[in-house]
Image (tube, rainbow, N blue to C red):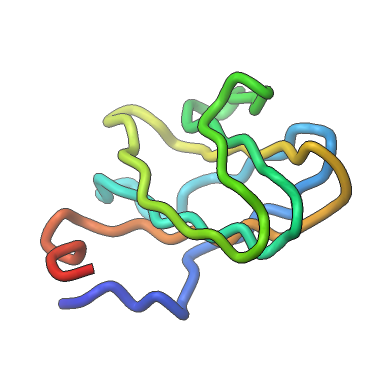
Length: 101
């Protein structure tokens, strides 16, 4: 089964304050993230208390997409923007779904 790039599992309404949301499925090894905003977003994966900071994984604005590996005990994804607001889309996927991506 392939990765459906136009079907996000969940979203984060990101601002300059850290926001998080739970992963929709526990048994996914990777997460495809899409930043639809025009500004840089920092992400951090973790438990239900995770907070994104400027030291997290960085993704540029302008419709960029990336695959990140999800920690085995991670249940939430947090995001924070440098400025402004944006919707961050993400979906869980397995290694098999990434073949040919």
